[in-house]
Length: 318
Image 1 (cartoon, rainbow, N blue to C red):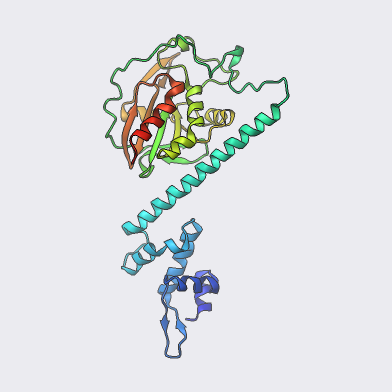
Image 2: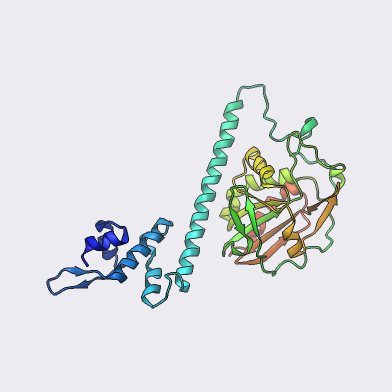
């Protein structure tokens, strides 16, 4: 068939087809008169290139998929090289999303600062009901003891659990990829107009979720620079509640919601009960390539924990 017919069947333009051919991605037969003769295999290759390109994979990097088809595979992504290209593209997309999220958070902070500059009204983002300050920790905050409840975690496979994040996406914990993912797990965050549980300050390791999150916010770019591919906060609070926290604190990363504590049940994570509700104890997981590489437990003080994670990442580069 001629190039116009190929373009029509593959829903491409003749200009695009010529470009693919210039890269050696398709090699049509040459007739005796010098004209190119395209066949159904070429149609399939052009369709495959277009589909992959629409997913964000550059045309030049579709070659492994085409070579997979040429080798006789039923699907273009049946080969290891194709899967590696998927992973690389996912990692690059994740970096772009996180960079944009960080820029968005900076813009939000700049907007809030500019909106209140010169005003007597002080934003109440960091204070709770009754004037309680959720960012400043009490000097007499009790230190949690190391009860060994997380000693079994390093080396375990990441569980096949899917959790919803505050961006509305389903996150598969066993498919986070080869880069390090930092997940800091916390009991609950307080917010203006919402009282903390009775005796919250006296429970070792309970107080400090908001300053901990602010620490990861402030060190977010440093964590990425030290090798963290993603950062998530995780609690049993629902997504709507967490979304308010993300917006109010200007977090450049998403929260994960696990209202049924499935992660605790699957991995045997430490929990505690207050006011008849079971909550996660404060704990941080570093997951890489489907495995728990490192844990932080117990965590104290929580407002310095992001710096502790950053120090570990820099001390243990990949």
